[in-house]
Length: 474
Image 1 (cartoon, rainbow, N blue to C red):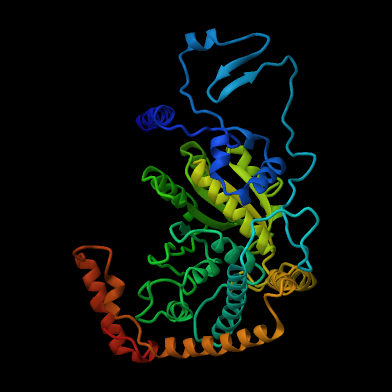
Image 2 (cartoon, rainbow, N blue to C red):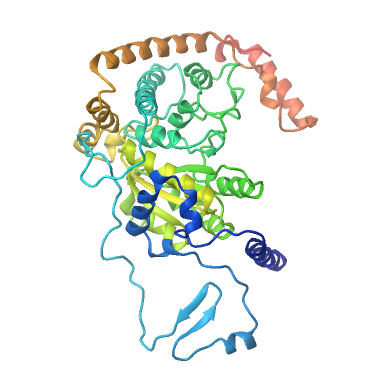
């Protein structure tokens, strides 16, 4: 352990020297060099992020190595401060404790009000008609998917499903702001990101029904998608494990000098896990180009955020680790799009992590295994479903621009229903992956115990065919 810490300290020192000698990147985010690399549309929004968020966002602490005691003694200034790794610390005669909370809550960035009207003094990244219409149609597609696949689970046709109702803007608008080269590490409520990237409705259905065309070969739970083609890492049920993975991937992209970043999604419950805190610190120290997107929907299954933490949400935790952060209205597609696109530019051009806390609400149940009316009032759910609906809000904005109408809406809804019902019929009719696939892709040469288990399973299926799907092969 001592060797590991010593090695890490040497690595950080060497890495800091390497950057200072070989790169001309300024560590001050508002320096001319960084400013010139941002697209003009981002500059005002960047200033808003800086002003409305953390005091630490104006500069980055420089990593240094702790000096020996004799050197530290020479750096002590009785009336001024002490030079310490991270910068000069002011010395004061008073005993002051840092307050456990700030006097005012961190504000929330917003572009559209609940009626789809741009608010006074709005500032956002402009969206073309083509992109805006695709964003909306994908949001509607995601909601239609959730409705029909949820019904399929209730009919016993699939074993599990998880919806994103009420959180469509976070899914689709964030995906629209990214590049296909950016690597996505999802939780389990980001099917819209994969949808935006080109994953077809049939591919979603194949995974849900675990047939032979499923990318996961039928090994994963339903709604746990993954696609190498779309730079979308396979979903894991374990909470927050994807967050440090994203930081490692981001650091790799940085070392390879790629014009891309890593993006990871998680809920407010994920921020209560140790992996979240380790990942933020890891990202800050390595200055990795990663975007952390927290969907703060108020509930970690049945646990409200009031029982999870006493801080001002999740956004303030970024400041604790030296990570630039912003709080955004998660039900405002334009605000999410603008914040994520700006964050991406910062992450890549300035080589830094960014934390985005998106305030939203999970209108649906946590999953098909949950009944959320047991722990939250039905009128609260209904208010968010009607008054704060992200899909309806974005549609009103499109209509105000003359980019959408009732006829287009009706055609989209009808076509989607027909497509989704057809994909279910096709997915159900395709045979399951061979039993042998359950024992592949781990060992180059399967050990004897696995070979025995494989033969035992095939024997059981043959002896009790009524207990297993009829379209499964050996």
